[in-house]
Length: 125
Image (cartoon, rainbow, N blue to C red; front, side, top):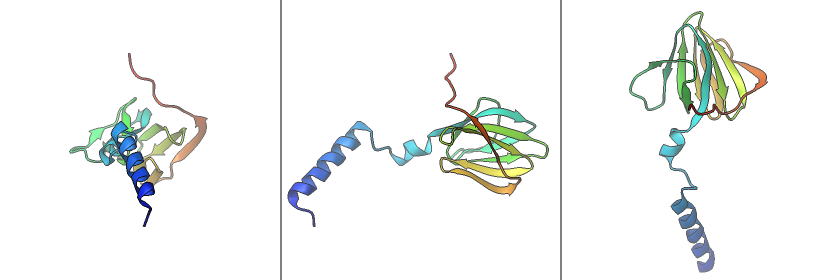
């Protein structure tokens, strides 16, 4: 057991951090943007985690955590992954999931990770 003074300190720090929003809720974490589409060739379909329907991917689309991509034959998708700070190129046919931790290839060719760095997409004016 912690001494009463230590327990009060833990509760105090938790209250401060929780009250300022420094401890993100799971809903905030799930909505985190982690990449953007730099280029797309052919047909690529995205299934965003928690989204009711798939969407066709287009250039400059923002990608959220745990988005699954289905790339049809002869298609290509190039993303800027913010945490990796690298461009990722995927070629179809493939099924790939992109998350904050990295890339999971469920089926298809390996992902090409460029040596070229990238950064968060600037906002539109």
